[in-house]
Amino acid sequence: MNKAEAFTSIRAIKLFTAALTLICLVAIVGVALFITRSISKPIHLITNSLNLNADHVFTPRLR
Image 1 (tube, rainbow, N blue to C red):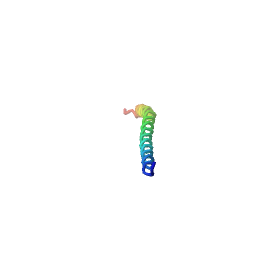
Image 2 (image 1 turned 180 degrees about the horizontal axis):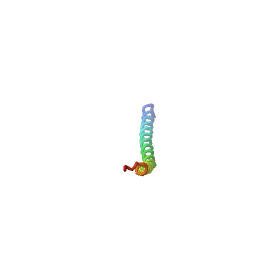
Image 3 (image 1 turned 90 degrees about the vertical axis):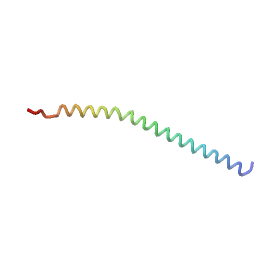
Image 4 (image 1 turned 90 degrees about the horizontal axis):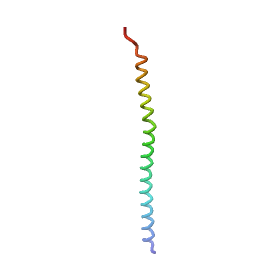
């Protein structure tokens, strides 16, 4: 095996590692966004509901 063949294998391994790292990062970001939205969506719904009820309770009555 000469030097060129050895470096060809090393380049292939580096490219594979870089591609795998990029795929994993994209997957991690996707999962993180999914989890974040699944947690924050019910909180926003509850907050909006409480604000709506508070507006009805604390709205002054006109006579």
